[in-house]
Image 1 (cartoon, rainbow, N blue to C red):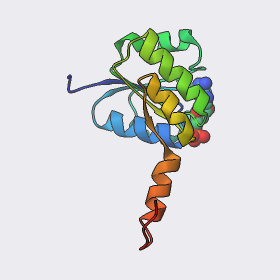
Image 2: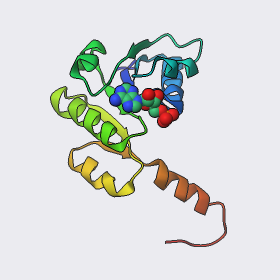
Image 3: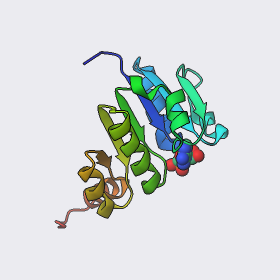
Length: 139
Ligand code: AMP
């Protein structure tokens, strides 16, 4: 496993920018993709990675990001279906070794896992964090 990873972040909103900033700060090669150029305004001034304006659903945009070199792809737009689609293409077509997708709807996580895609559910993480704030047991 190399020390420096080549990581693609799809969707450069609050979460995507935070990931891109931190990964870049840690010395990794980062490519941030967003279809809205103003999304990159939240990247740190120290961000030294690449920014690509484009729709990650288009394979040409993934080629421009040199996805074949990527160790990891994070699909973190706000749309579960978009994240699933990009994650699937990254995993199956380009064989990116590590693909992680944001999924709001916990019911959809099973589908993602069937495709071998790791998922992070903000909904589930938030529910756990809220419940940990109170001294009761919840199922
Ligand atoms: P947020 O709303 O803060 O979670 O940000 C989500 C980001 O994902 C926004 O900046 C959108 O422009 C971006 N986004 C949504 N769909 C796509 C897509 N197909 N390709 C690239 N970026 C996208």
